[in-house]
Amino acid sequence: MHTPREFVPARHHDGALPEDTIVFAYSGARLVWQGAEDAPAMPTLRELAHAGIAGDVHMLGALAGRPCVAMTLADDAALPEGFIASGLRSLFFRIPDTTLAIASRASQIVEWDRTHRFCGRCATPTREKPDEYAKQCPNCGLTEWPRVSPAMMALVTRGRELLLARSRRFASTSMWSALAGFVEAGETVEDCVRREVREEVGVEVGSLTYFGSQSWPFPHSLMVAFTAEYAGGDIVLDDDEIVEARWFAADALPQVPASVSIARRLIDATAARLAAR
Image (cartoon, rainbow, N blue to C red; front, side):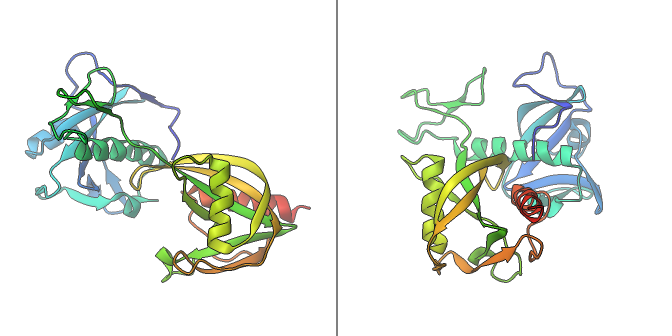
């Protein structure tokens, strides 16, 4: 989920928003859409107004010159016939990548709007700053921006092998992936890679190579992906996190995550590089 080339982020729109503005409206963590099951479409301001759907609006930018906004609805908003609210994951591969990327951005703005309505220091209702995405307390001045939680992803390699694991969160599936975990306070991303690999599977890693990053709106993560060279140790699982971990040949991989995730791109690119040796 990268920012599309045809999308220009913007915090403001000069004048009134046109009726054909694209709206990414969320009721809690569910995105509102309409249309066919296999081709969900985002509603316009006009369509939502006619349906009596309204909420707090946050400017996102313009897609090919057409304004896009996020809208915060009540968590239990009742939607009229013709409108459906679904979790963003369920819309993977059903909406275009461009739409998915903007919906991801909108979900994080809405999450910030929903969870920062009161000051975390003195409990006073906050106010939005007009010049940026920020909530400021009029009493004590505390300012809160949309949260971004950095997480590392590490694909450990040993010769022509890759270390993949099955997470306990997805124990009911046969999906294998790279190791991942959140950065703790005071850590560098590199420190986090080494600690998480050691904690989850018991092995040590040496040289790290940056691969890429991906905004991941569940609810507000930034995944930073690396390859890491095996430096020693046997696999010892953290049973609270990992169901199974194994070394796989680069040309004989198990089921891995879908292509929408950076995990899949990391695995595919690394496997191709190692298989070519």
